[in-house]
Image (cartoon, rainbow, N blue to C red; front, side):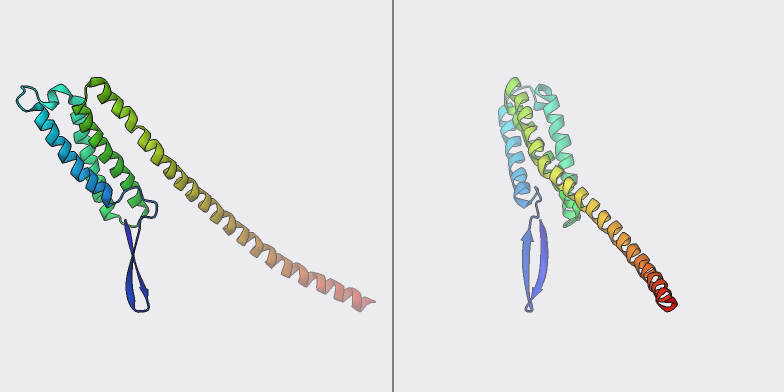
Length: 182
């Protein structure tokens, strides 16, 4: 979330703007609440049994740990690079990693087939968010190309204007000589 401070009539007004960012504090609050809740439910599920979640669903638990580490680094990067283009990227990574860590914990609680299917459902999330990211990249490419075109056209017009002044001076001199000769 970006905060802009604007001075207007000697008052400081805070404007909060997400500027199209997928990641914001409410997402962090959801992951900070949901993951400990799911860990507690997993503890209750395996309480009194000889097995642990690492024995019954090792890939899901390792996916959870890896996604949580990535989430922590991405969230820290998001806080570090506020209001920059890196903030948007780190916000997306944090959102994906946080949701993947939650999905990994939910898959531990489900039987084998539904536990795997929930990962397939999670794949829809990056596709939906990638649409906005692809639009952002295309807009950036368009702006870069248009800026380059305008710079080239500006240089071209500047070059033509310089040539036309020189050509006009030569034309006037030739016309003057023709008039004087007559």
